[in-house]
Image (tube, rainbow, N blue to C red; front, side, top):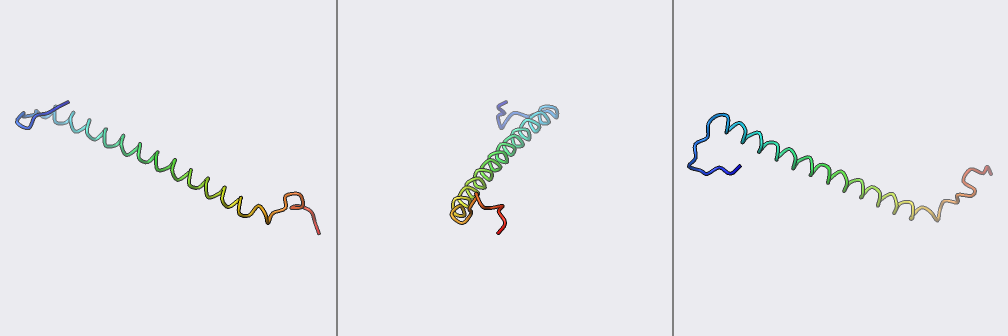
Amino acid sequence: MLVRKEQDLNEIQTEVFDILVSYDVEEKNRRKQHASKRLLEARRAIERRREEKELSPFIDNDSWFDEE
């Protein structure tokens, strides 16, 4: 819906325009939140992998539960 500056809008047109704009803003925010969540999950997975790799030489899985 393209509106020219000199065009006067009635109340209904203004309300519809506001709804469309607010919907677009909300949809953009949802997409940003989803992308941020995926990025955070990826970062956490990378951190877990690095931590496991760093600690693996110190952990002997075969004797982890053996009593001394």
